[in-house]
Image 1 (tube, rainbow, N blue to C red):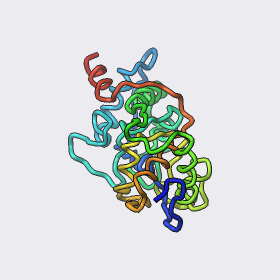
Image 2: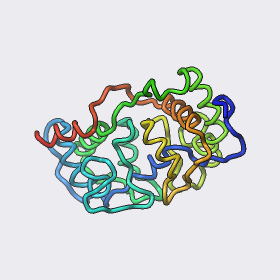
Image 3: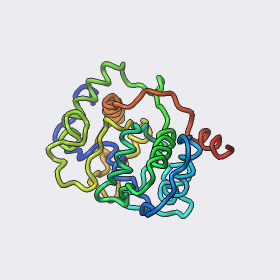
Length: 242
């Protein structure tokens, strides 16, 4: 199958990363709490994360809590996405309909800022490996756009903001790709497996070349800061030692 001619007629309801908004499962927010003094360093953010988020997302943020808890939709593997701080803060404040993710408006502002900053460090910047690349950037971008328009825009919207004509009433709602960027591995996993408990099914009919192209395009919709991050496990170990 040629990369620049994606198959029509297969309705891809929320390709890739519906998991991202559908997976913010956490325990109920605390009713009270004392705001920490001073700034909000990452070590402080980690403490908040371990106390209130790790029970669902895992202590490393990989969606694998020590308890073995499995939610539907599952808790997001935070290590598989770059998430902008504005996106994280919105999810923390508003929660996500149709999931176990409640709003955390009772969290003191300093703790909210700290855990937001820490959560943003759990993902890592990803690049397409040259041996795995199927085409040049401009070809991937255009091919991915075609796949996206045919299969994804109905739910995720033309600009990837989760506001497509088919998004109304979906719980959890389609992801806003402007606030999150998947790694190639995370995107491929969601396409191959779908997201239990959501409207995102598995889509094995997409070819590997189409998966790479649409992932490349979706990654281009991200509006968050460009940054080079350490592997999540290394950052986690470093913060544990502090």
